[in-house]
Image (cartoon, one colour):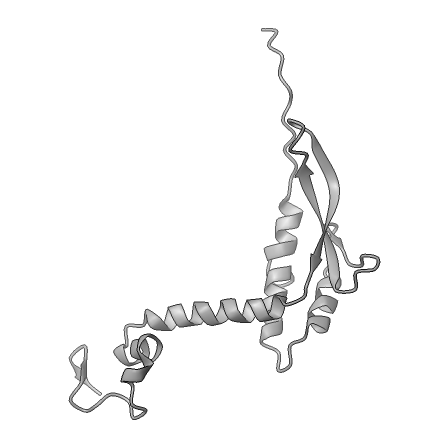
Length: 146
């Protein structure tokens, strides 16, 4: 019909998503597996990330020893429809382990705080009410004396 239009470029970011999230070797699963180590370290985490085999990963960035790069497809916001591909975005891993620990602890506390066991809920939500000896014999939990 002779309507002029500008084609939309829709790059496939599946490789980037897999690099970030795919178990067991994605960056995020690797991060959480390092939290389980007896002595987690940023150096060991970074070495593991740099060992991931992905076309989207740039393991070494010049003059940035705590960084790795991920190739994202990015759009230039000043130009409608213009996409710059092969843009390497640097990620600095400083404090990633500490932040992940904090996130994991928060998730654990929310999980325990929603327990169906009143003692476990109180340990999380009202620790002062727990006297160290557990529930008193007179207290009932769902009809069961503990």
